[in-house]
Length: 453
Image 1 (cartoon, rainbow, N blue to C red):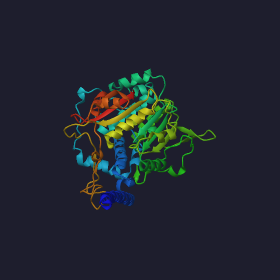
Image 2 (tube, rainbow, N blue to C red):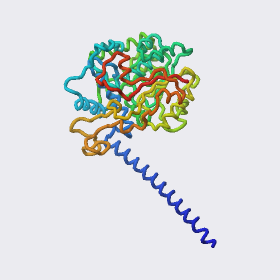
Image 3 (cartoon, rainbow, N blue to C red):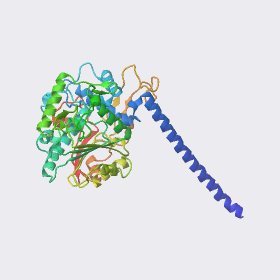
Image 4 (tube, one colour):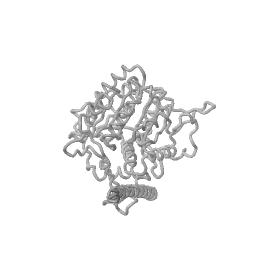
């Protein structure tokens, strides 16, 4: 009888041990596969040497800014974008135009729209503004308005109906906001291309591979990343690109960039770094922030904010959180936890700005991003197949999206500690700016600004 009673317990123990062994082996194989995939990626050049398509999305988004900067009358200027994104992403972006663009560019009927108000130094443009560029312009103006507290340069940046409540909130604020945090920063270049007031501290959070690649490419481009380093490296004096992605602005766009730099200087930003002797030394791309720092953390893990606090983020002072093109890569519980944790370390008068995809019943062609490589080409990895291993290489970023907001977006943010000031689709944002768009249907891509509740 004792043996009969111990037999079920022994069998149960064997089953538990077998399941534990299976889990351990699965974990070992997963890690081994990840190491092999990472080695293949680095050796073959898939995703520009980055670890995944999600990481490489930073390059693809920067390529959009690079192509926009090449336009005769661009809506935004980002002279660093081509050098940051790399040749693979540039080729993919330009190939998309060759595949998808009609022979004649569609132009919206601007007679029913307000007169466009492009950024300083640019001219009114009849060309429809692309979705990603409208998103960039929106966040550009939020950053400028918030850091300048809605006055001077910030007042002009926020002079659109979609920023009306934001400006009113900024003018009621007792303290200026001099901290900016970009979560999922990618290859953003705002600290070098936007006029910022004195004393702004800039923090960027992303994956380790993205931040490492960005720092290396910034160094090659001749961008100042340390406000205390006065003399630019001589090694970058004759190069204007990263790797094979060299990019030199046409003369007209160089003049536009100089106008922007002049505006920044007039606004109080000294883009001349001085040596110990007091002689001015010009960087190719001077840092307009008082400090710039990166933090590689996993935003899907609780406690990620400790990395920012260790980098010097002051939780007793207001902060502007920028979540551009980030949230849809996370699962909904992680989105809620991230917004709540950001709120928990934010001082009163802090602000958040984010892009969100709203869940819709039918597919929305303007809700995702698909980029194609050159015709007849492929990723350098798979003998004519793309990163997914299926046919010609494509970069379908929307396949990586995990979260779409299924409830009222302002309510979702309010439940996480943020009170919405504005929430509108990118098409309505363009209309608020008086800018034409080629898309006339509704869009699931929304832009939101909110204040700490």
